[in-house]
Structures are given as C-alpha cells and as structure tokens.
Amino acid sequence: MRRTTIKLDVDGVLRDCVTPLLDIYNKKHDDNVKYSEIKSWDIGQYLKGDNEYKNYFTKYPEQIFRDAPMYNPNTVEILKSIQEKYKIHITTSQFKGLEGHTVTWLHKHNIPYDYLSFAKDKNVVTGDILVDDGVHNLEASNTETNICFTQPWNSEWKGDRVNSLEELAMMLGVNRK
Image 1 (cartoon, rainbow, N blue to C red):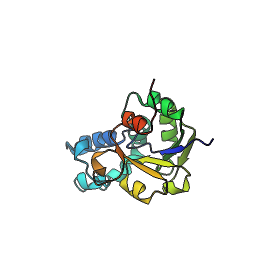
Image 2 (cartoon, helix red, strand yellow):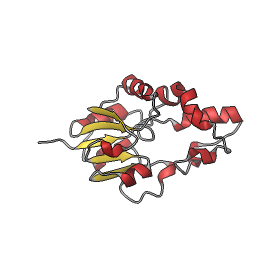
Image 3 (cartoon, rainbow, N blue to C red):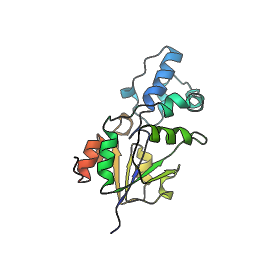
Image 4 (cartoon, one colour):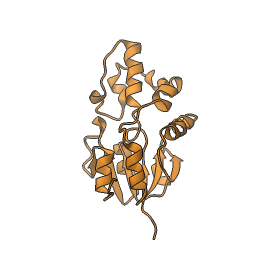
C-alpha cells in the first residue's frame, strides 16, 4: 500500500527566518518592526520602503537561513511520528545558491524527511498534501489537500489550517508517543 506523501514547506512552517531578518533590519535602521506586524507575504511594505532588504538574504544567509530557529522545539519528535504513517517530502523555494544553508539547517536539527526538493513552483513536486504558509502556494496547489500553517501574513486563507505541528499531527490522525 502506497503511503500518502506530505509536501512540507520549511520557511514559515519549520524554520523562522523572519525573526533574524527583522533583527538585521531593525538594528540597521534603528527600528522596531515586530513579527506580528507582518500581515502580508510582501515583507518589504513593512520595512520603511527599504528595498535593500531583498539583499539581506544573500548578504546574511547564515543568520537568516542556516542559524535560524525552529518554530517548535518538538519538531523532530512530531515529524518522526508523522513519518511513521506518511512520507515527508520537504518542498521549499529558496534563493538560487542558498539551498546549501537549508540543507545544513535540516541536518543540524536532525529534521526527518524522505525526500527534499527545491522548487519555486511546488506543483512540479508530486504529493498528496501540501502544508505551507504561503497563500499563493496553497491557491496554486495541485494536491488533494492543502493545509495552511498559520502565520500573521496568511489570515485570508479560508481552507484547512493548523496553528502548530502538534495540530498538524492531530489533523493527520497521528498518535504521538
């Protein structure tokens, strides 16, 4: 019997790259933009018209990607439980040339997964369920089930949603040990 495959996003679901980005921006501009204030995928509109923030990803990839914190300290345990019943296909979009920082982050935190793909268009990756924080990815998805991982920037999503990995495990019918 084929196991159902979950396409699982990294940034905004497993890894918090917004906090380090805001730390860099706030320090550079003597500002105090908070995570909870980011209400749109276009973070630039909250950064005093600083178009330079786009360069932060390539200028500070270690802080923003490699050393970024996990949202949930129980991520590994929860994903291992999910992996007993489902295949986990990490499906993430990254800036070209920075993919290695994500691979390093996944290995550093011992994130369990069966497959790993970097794709701007997540539909090129086969799967049954998409878990993502980007409404644009969820709306364009070709999977049977789309689950939004709650973030301040995706409140307009009207479909299935989870607020944590624990809620995802419960929604998937996974019993944690």
